Image (cartoon, rainbow, N blue to C red; front, side):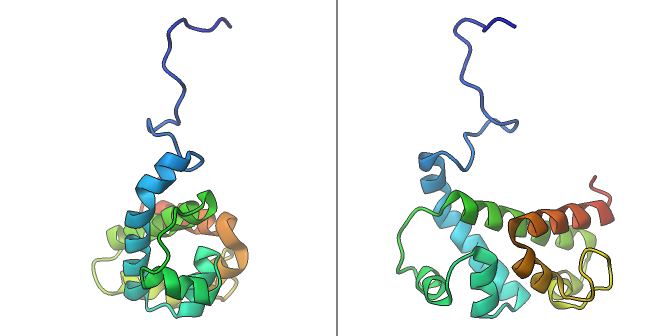
Length: 144
């Protein structure tokens, strides 16, 4: 297959450069941290839970939360925040009451959770499990 002359550089399917691009990460970091902070408050997460979900130490999370760390988030951290905010949005589309914010902290007997809370499962399973939970929530609400 021949290259198309003067074609624009390929971007991901949504037309953005993605989280691997330093400039894009710098542009998104402040907003992503604010969104994550709101999610932490809405879900009632402890500092330990929030830091584990973000993939940082508790002391680093405390500094980030207090605005004392003015840095660009890593690709890993932005991916985590993206998955979690997708779960948050999906839950708010699925539930019209406070269940949307309680669900992540409730024990779940589904195969994906094995009687853990979704938060516990995502803390132990990292990004792959966060993405699975996001797909699960989207599927339950009929978004897939």
